Length: 117
Image 1 (tube, rainbow, N blue to C red):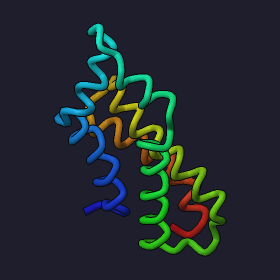
Image 2 (tube, helix red, strand yellow):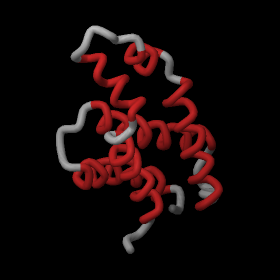
Image 3 (cartoon, rainbow, N blue to C red):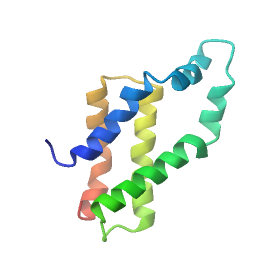
């Protein structure tokens, strides 16, 4: 088990389960079929997916690690970056999942590490 394996597993969960999710598949298929009703909602309305994911992941990080040296504003910024990158790799995969996870962790953990993670 690696350091912060729980975060790594959570990040890995997004593309692994998303690729097999019927709703995601229907939403993403809007790029190639005439029915594009779901895709604009996902891309232009941040609250249903992005907002809830940021709130849930931020709360989990705060509960698990406390990070008293990290303000709520800075935690929200780091969490938003982590969630946006995970969703980006789901919407437009360009590499194997494990490589994407490594990239996401490499980008987001320095800010958290500076706060005592």
